[in-house]
Length: 502
Ligand SMILES: [Zn+2]
Image (cartoon, rainbow, N blue to C red):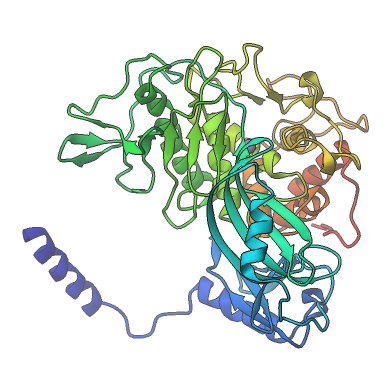
């Protein structure tokens, strides 16, 4: 009671001291600029006369602002209709990133198929259905010719295991137009109590202390068997035995808090969802795997039964959550595992633990399959993935397709010499000088703030160039490094891509 009285007094005096005329802040400026851009309906938007646009919460990075939009057509939400307006420190519109490739034209919004029938078609895409989330009418503008569709999300088991699948069904013909899997699997690392004796923040509860972050209360570590948050009477957790779930939580939870710190210090971002929120970590998945499904991170074990709590695994999974909670959602065109790996490597570098020294391999600490790391960002081909982008990358297995992007990230960060991490080969025999991992990650993240639902490797080339240019005005060093690194992994120059002149 005393606490709330004090709070009330404080807020009264705060409001009494407020100045009557506050200057327009940079977010308001960005919102107004973006509204003016949208009102002019520039060609880049592919606007039809039935379009309407809904501004989404602005994401800020220092003085840059990113204003995302959703689109409706005759009042129906358009999947693949999203776009982002970037504004500079002075509030000028600097770039607009648009998912949609063509105007929608004249489309009937009256379905011939019922929602129930569409849901049945969606369920038939799974081997076993555990639940149905929702089925909504959309215009699917993700492909070449926009269609009226039912978008149905179903949970259960698919051909590759656990699944949370969004299926878009043609609302006229019943044809399955496309499917989006929300379960991202890792295949990851960790060995016992990976980080050894560590400290982290907990929340005082009736039973003592809970593995719940006091500042980001949606970050909890739980037993996957019952979704109960681990608690301790003396605020000590785990026993160093990586086969116990509580010890698995020590590694994963410690790592997640460090990632939140990295997001704040390097990327000016408020936790994984950007709004001070995170996702529950659930240790005890009965599989040699870990995944993020849009709502939680499930963490399994290695060949020795030790839970996988390391930065390049759980940090990678939480990287998927950042990807899902930046404009455009989970990266497409087979780039999502590359995106998640950049978060894993950056978190590992930020933690800088002697028990897990920063490097660019993925999964070295635990030996998921007993054969060492599962991916190598310095030289992806050393573990069977492609070093160079090609027209087959978009069709490869998702983790294999991370190769060219991981290789690009290594080159931007470390350069061809590797800066202590070993030399990295290039696909064009060029030499690249690295910018360091913090700068590489800032560029990556600002490109993510410009992404739309039509992302791909060629798109990431364009967006990272725009990011380097806007983050380092007056300098072309960073821009040129980003460009040289994409050239070095064979992602070719794109029509109309940004240029830089100092
Ligand atoms: Zn992944």
